[in-house]
Length: 171
Image (cartoon, rainbow, N blue to C red; front, top):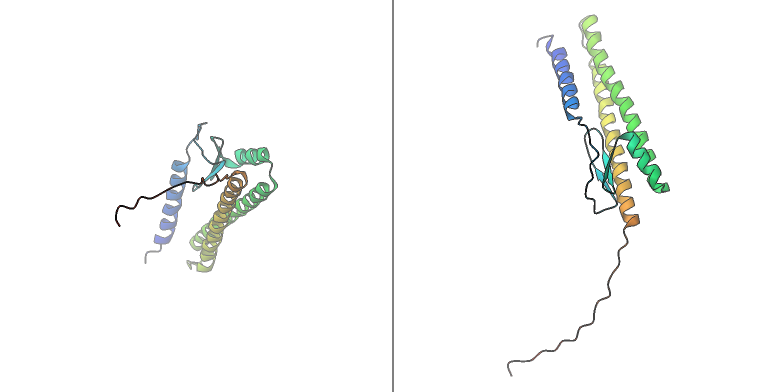
């Protein structure tokens, strides 16, 4: 196997990831959406969002403002869990990328032996980061589900009594 294959593969993967994330970030304009529910969770790869009263809330600043406006203890608990998981995910993601990159740079400067343990550790830390990011999104979705159940008032109309009769056509 060519000694330059792994660094080139890693660098091309990093370049592809950066280009993909830059292309995925779009400017969200102030648009209003029809929302039959009270709070709707919209999953996304980078920034999950919530629609409340026709307005799209994206990002930490807007979501914090929304949850402060709603001022519900249970919703605030879900949002705190979301923020803590999201913060831990971001820190571990940077650490995983740094550890993997360190293993590649160390391989280039040392005695040409690739340290698979360091590289694998970076990949494992990146996987844990992805798991925490999924848990963060799940907490935000649970907040939307809780809000919908708490604010939906179902009313049942009483069954109307009906009078019916039958006419037999045969003996």
